[in-house]
Amino acid sequence: MNRALAALALLCLAAGGCGGGTASLRYRYPRGRVSTYRWTIDGTATSPGASHTVHLEAAVREEVLASLPRGGGRLRLTLEPGTALQDARPIDPGPALSLDLDVGPDGHVIRITGTPSVPVGAIDALDLGRLLAESRPPLPARGVRLRDRWNADVSSSGAASSIRLTGTGRLEGFSLAGGRRLATIGIARQGQVVAASNGPGSVLSPTPVPAPGTLTGTATDTTSARFDLDRGLVVEATSSATSAVSIPSLQSTPAGASGALDVRLTTRVTLEHAS
Image 1 (cartoon, rainbow, N blue to C red):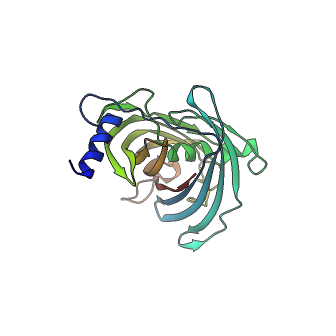
Image 2 (image 1 turned 90 degrees about the vertical axis):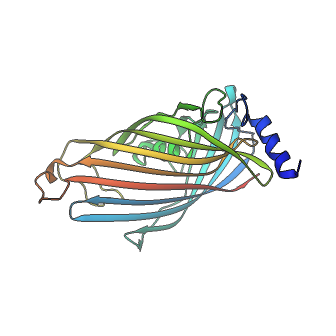
Image 3 (image 1 turned 120 degrees about the vertical axis):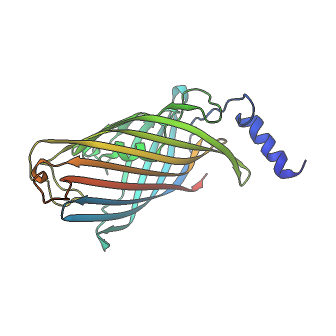
């Protein structure tokens, strides 16, 4: 048996990738580990007569402060903004942000704690819970076989919007890279988004929607990720999210106009280093 076949056989036996075995997909939080990720976010917001784009990059340092009972971890995330473009023009990306959070072994964010750079009151306003949910794919609470599915529902709320998605994750396959065993995960979700129409504009929609009240719409989210089975962390993940919200004040638009605000976001997370 050559080395490649031997490695594949070991992968199948150890991760449950062949036969009737199961794989345990769990995040691990060894105290003191520091991981550095590169986040890239590209977005487009389109409404009748207007379209805006945004491109954001950030380096994210993730330090494990403590291991918690039942396999959880206390993390400190430091986001260092990089390139920031709106409609292809440079904008101020803002200061570095640091926050502490407790996370379960399935990736669920249990608690976000304010720090001097991000006061407690700013956590909801910045929709940080939603951003963290996008960057940390949910894992099953049980062992799974190849092509098994598990619940991947997610909900988050902030000052400007809230979102509730239901769907499943699926173990798509196994691979080897640099001597490490990786699992490929796919996630598909859909649901509703609720937005405050009289709130401030965002980087994607600089002008507030004129009609006061609450707007509702639909949303979908798909994620493809590679997970390191040995270290218990994400190696790379790409999420594509879309939402469409009807705006009452735009319902009497000219023929062919949808009277809706459509937002498309693509988030890419890539591991650059882990100690």
